[in-house]
View 1 (cartoon, protein in one colour):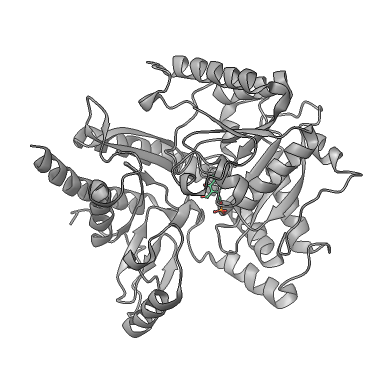
View 2: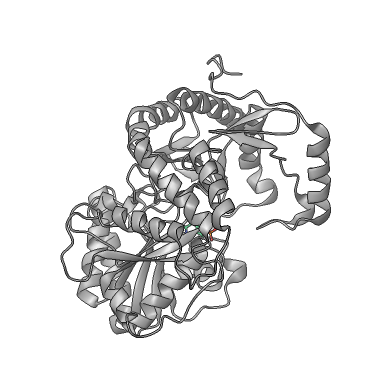
Length: 477
Ligand SMILES: Cc1ncc(COP(=O)(O)O)c(C=O)c1O
């Protein structure tokens, strides 16, 4: 175990082994889990959580470097958000979406206010964000954004990148560029994939970020021309691809996408479901593109209310709003703008503002994660690359730093994936919840994790990576 002292913020929960045992048994008997072979599962029973920590039935605590599925952006149990949900439940626990209600109106105002900062001053050309269409999560935000884009442009095709995730509804999973699409791919009409910038594993034989950016844009333009610009409604792009590997777009890439969209009259849908609400040290990661660069539609979910109650949505610019000003938008959801979810969003956004949590994410990236992870990479034989910003970091794991052979093959399963399973187990054994995907582990904690907690978590992660390195290198020698 690390010699680093345990942070003073670690809670000391009471054990409740009987309740945990019952939860586990009922789960195994009756709960059907996502993305899994059911009979192989052995889920951790989480009995409670506070800040960046969760605990199980034995009272064992785990530091959460994953913020669950990258969404508890303000950590667990923030008292102001919990109180806001309780008060809203007592006042108006639910109401149908056709009625206005205070929680939803205020959530929309706060979200729009933040989106209006993207890219500096609006061009006045219909690019200002004014309205929010609320959904229950990220995938349905994507569905509805694409529907809006298709109706607005009168075109069917939608371009998305390989190495992306956009959700698990029909359009969203078909837009997805990772192996979760394969078993769900019934050939959604009009979806076309292209390669985005990813210098470490460049599809364009580029040696520098500048080359990667120029060639990725050239490839995107070729794709547009060969598919027929007049058939394409939108390009859907995670501003920073998240689960697929946290590839920060090189300077100029998002501006180049905007420029191509303008040239060919295509809409840019920025998927900010994971990268938004502070994750990248900005309210929206597309702000990294700089002044004058704004998407046409933005999808969000997760961090908007730290996932305390399911919520997502589409932020709509005036040009698209105008399309539906006198013509009905043919879409809706029973729980669109649910008051409990919106009250949680209002409280979360206010807490993030009052406690400067977005600024803290930016600082954590610059002062803690950037330098600590770079030093870890120098010490470790299996960390090939570290990249990220804010509280959004990926460690690319390799068998050989020279050849960049991934630690496990693409979409590995079973024995081929053993090193990554070992990494997960080695982390949990040390009291750490990691985010593990493919040949990568991501450091994506709550944005208000303390510096002590962050450094402690990295020390545990390094020990776990050392275990894996020893096992893999022994096997290879
Ligand atoms: C970038 C991105 N888009 C969309 C989604 C889908 O969101 P949800 O699972 O809330 O439907 C996710 C989920 O991880 C995501 O990361």
